[in-house]
Length: 481
Ligand SMILES: *Cc1c(COP(=O)(O)O)cnc(C)c1O
Image 1 (cartoon, protein in one colour):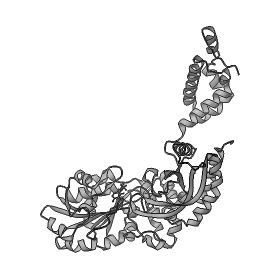
Image 2 (cartoon, helix red, strand yellow):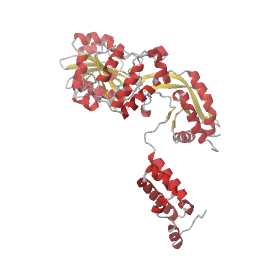
Image 3 (tube, protein in one colour):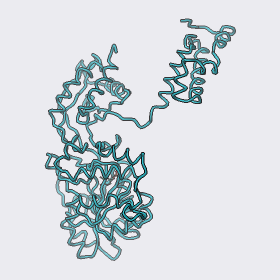
Image 4 (cartoon, helix red, strand yellow):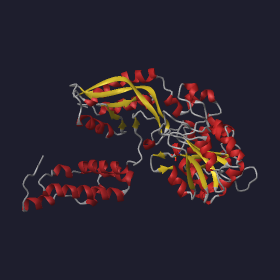
């Protein structure tokens, strides 16, 4: 090593003269693979950056001429380019315990959806072309039949997400008129979706009835007037009103709406197509039950409990869906072919309910047996202990996961995972945050959560197929590795 500590005058000039010409370096054997992979323009750029950094170091008396060899430069430039070309959207390990995590992309799609998307990505398709008549088609027609079959609705349409579905429904059916909603249902979903705001965006006037905890049928009845366009019910996705409460059910509200000649719109939020209680999950009204109970229009998300791609589905009465589809916003909020392909593949899985638990990724994760997670925790424990170091104690223990995305907010699912605490038994301060950061900096970042003095990695969403890769990257970062 020819480290140079003090560089004044001549010495610095002599050092700078050692910087090779970029043309010569680029033409060297060491750089051939880089140029082939990234193209000369990017490599030249990165080489200049690397050499500039070296000059800065030299001026500060910290540079080594060894770093100027073709091989060293190729290594630095290669690392720089690899980092730059890493995609910004990256896969992570979701060990937060929240299965449908909005910040982590919500539902994971089954293989059937993946291959449908690959097909349509790489080949032209009949997106808006009717293969029977040879005429122009409607993209909604590709999956409307399937949606109606699964929900019992007369008609359906699909938009970008459920927020868009609610906005479009209100814009098309209630613009410049009143929509009656119970005060107990004026939800705010994360990310600035608030029922009162959406209502005014859609040009509709919110008519609140009842109180936060109690709303009666007569509250709706008394609020109905000549300006009323719709009665609306909104799923209390992310909160629960308990105690001295009264909510008017859809079944109670439907006869009133009918008698007064009004439609009921329901924002179901998550919206499930099957009774989750059959797998021991908390019960939720299905879309079919909601339609049968008298909802005229129902909207719900594609990527929550349904387990599909981001989308908003609107189902209901034929005349109302036709009106919604004619609204100019529909064109702005429509979905692309990738969404349609993925959604159709996921919906098809519902035709075989007996296989659904195994095939639909979301459902498989939500119903994972505690034993499988416990065994996985026991297998991984030692690797995490080595990676964390002796400062920490890693224990396999029971914990609770959440469904997430506002689905069934108060219910928690018994789960199993790894909890990391200080080996000293003392209450951890910054140490856990530092460990959490180290896990986040792994090639495929690992995301857990810190709660009650422990860093918790819930293993519900680490399926066996992924376990080896998970352990391998822990081993690669263990002390001594
Ligand atoms: C989640 C949710 C929405 C928003 O759905 P996105 O698909 O995220 O746009 C709207 N309403 C309710 C009640 C929800 O739970």
